[in-house]
Image (cartoon, rainbow, N blue to C red):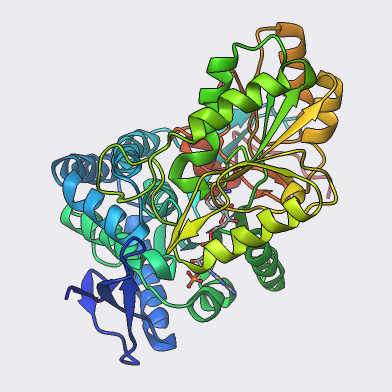
Length: 480
Ligand code: NAP
């Protein structure tokens, strides 16, 4: 049985409290690895190590940061199968999703290497004669990160890699269900030549380790990806010490299909957008909002396609739907489906489960009194909602507390732009899927989907502070 220790100050160390936890393979229910969980003292040492390392790392040359990040990208490319195996066995990722996630991180590392050279300030005019006025960007110091289980490599790496590219040091608490892939980020960066202490990884429960990260005054900023419920709690805690915080939270994203759409294309876009990673995607288009003129045909063709998606062993390359992170999630999804059906929704396909596997499920006739209309299912359950026109589509799309991603399928430019500008979401994809990301784009949401943006220069802005700096040429006249 493989055992993974904590990664603190460049060393693999045992849990101070002797806590070692089973990490399960969601597809088989078997123990995949045993993981050391950090005690209060371990987290304290990790923060202290990050603080010590920040003196040198904060003034390191961009060339040094660039070289290490490029090395890490090359190493990851060479070791792709090792990371893909962990994603399949620990997170229940299908082979295709694990490959895509790993290659995203390779691109992320390379694009972050470039960001290290592009942390710029500006000069500005001044009303004082002879005054040179400028802004410079400085790293924040130690950043704490808490990441979720669903894209456990990509989402944790985005935080860590962009933070260190900006000259910060990092303490990461990965999701307990996917702690190994979090630890392997530390291992990869260490192998690439990152100095000890710059990145530390401390698995442990959210309530314990997560809470310590948000309350410790040595941590300048907390970057969190996870549920809205926990994100709101962390925002309250962070406010007590005025700690900077960015939140990437839940979603109930819409895809709007207008009646001029190519239906086959719309079916493909909506299907990918909601069933990627068996629906465990914050950007999942779990609400398909379809104009009435094509509703019946869309439902028929969508349901026919969904019924062909292969559910099962995530290692088999043609599997689309792997296991949920744990079997208890199936009961949660069942409660959404049962509530909808009891209140009059039509179950077009799915609604069954075995172990941690939930069949891809399509509901039609979903109305606002049903739980699934509003709440994030975070699984392979989608609602198709009929609307009369694009204006009603916009009203229904915005009828949610969330505002993460969205998509519109139409070839009508006027309507596309009206919807794109009117959708209350941080991201809109016209003729695409709501589930989309790239390393350098402003990823993030509004409303209950969070605050702040992650990716490329947007992370550089979040993870540095602006300092105003002036130089007086000659002498200034003071009034007294
Ligand atoms: P979660 O339960 O909120 O957990 C996320 C992380 O927070 C985990 O590391 C968890 O640790 C930790 N945590 C739990 N309780 C905590 C506490 N009291 N204080 C500090 N940390 C705490 O979310 P999840 O189930 O892993 O992920 C699914 C959610 O994340 C969905 O709502 C999804 O939409 C959202 N998500 C958002 C994005 C985005 O970019 N907007 C991306 C992916 C996922 P433990 O694992 O130890 O509980």
